[in-house]
Amino acid sequence: MLEGLFGNSVIEKVLFYLLANQHGYATELKEALGISLNSVQIALSRLERGGILVRQSLGKTKLYQFNPRYPFLDELQAFLKKAYSSIPTDMRNRLYEPPIRKRPRRKGKPL
Image (cartoon, rainbow, N blue to C red; front, side, top):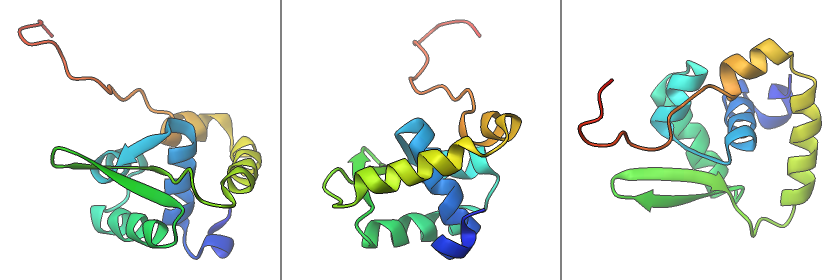
């Protein structure tokens, strides 16, 4: 939908995912979106160089989120929200809002 504006569909999917989930890391995005890890890493790097995203290290994991100091953040998020609302609900639920466990399981807890 917006790949003409952003240059490719991977950046569009990454931005929509971060809009819906606030933050994410490369492998999480790869698994949720069904895109190759290399493509996701290139898109994240490009968005970070542009100042749209910031990276935070949590151990070995590099967590990405929108840069709160980006001067057009409010406008970008408003634009993305409008575009996101036009995506069919089943596609939104399947790609961008998957039930991903964000916390580790308690040690010894049965499956």
